[in-house]
Length: 155
Image (cartoon, rainbow, N blue to C red; front, side, top):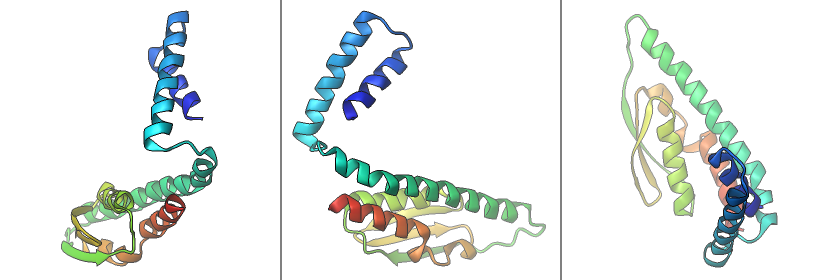
C-alpha cells in the first residue's frame, strides 16, 4: 500500500509520465518501502487499515473544532464592547505516547483563540483568549478522539 502511494505521489509531483520517470519512481518507491518496513516497522497493512477510521474521525473532529472556534472568535471580534477575559489553564490527560500528547497540543494550538504554551509530562498549559473557550478543555472532543487513536496505535 505504501509503495503504491509513494509511486503515485512521484508521478503526480513530476507532472508527466515518461519511461524514465516511471522506472525511477518504481525504484525509489521500492527503496522507501523497503526502508520503512525494515527500520521503521510499518509492514502490517491490516493494522494501518484499522487505524484509518480513527484518523478520519480525528480529522473530522479537528475541522469541526476549528469551525466552532472561528465562530466564537467572530462573535468576540464583532461584539460591540469586545469584553473578553483571557486566561491560562492547566490540565492533565491520560495519554501515554509522546506522539499523541504532541498531537493534542498541536490540535489545541490550531484552533483559533487557544495556544498550547507548554507541555510537561502529562500537564498542558494553554492560553485561551476567553474563559468560555477554556471550559471543559480537559475532557474535550480532542482528548476523546486522540485517546481512541492512541488505543489503536499502541495495540
